[in-house]
Image (cartoon, rainbow, N blue to C red; front, side):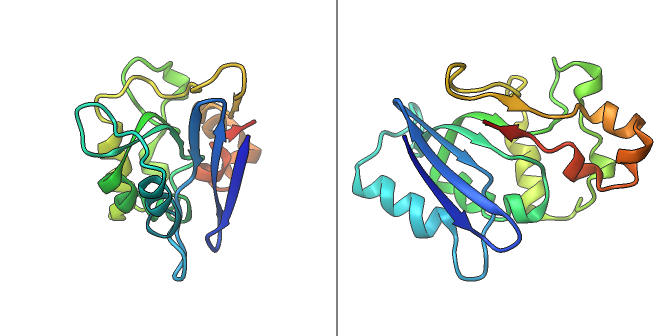
Length: 168
């Protein structure tokens, strides 16, 4: 397994290769480092990585966004230009999800943030993405959004941080 952790200011971004899978956790950028243009794109070009079938974009098995805050998604527009994630895993409101697992976008804020808008566009038409690319190597943990809304102790904190996905 290879794991590369990027310090992108207020958050971290992590690129992982295991078995034959590729996983990217969060995709924030800083003023001096963009994980897409400074690392992923040069790497995928150098190794002549496979393209996603039917597109000219590079294939990534899974993009996992822990929660939709700008510091975790600020390089998403660059990512979407060059990469296609087979799975896009993030707190969301896709059809087919359990009612108590649906995200309340009104509590997120940042409605005008282009990265958040891009994330919501990328979720359209995808199956409920709270699943892993490899059941044997990844495990997803999170507090369902409805439990966060109903918990008086958690609601006094940041809703978005409280619905964060953790992957092991």
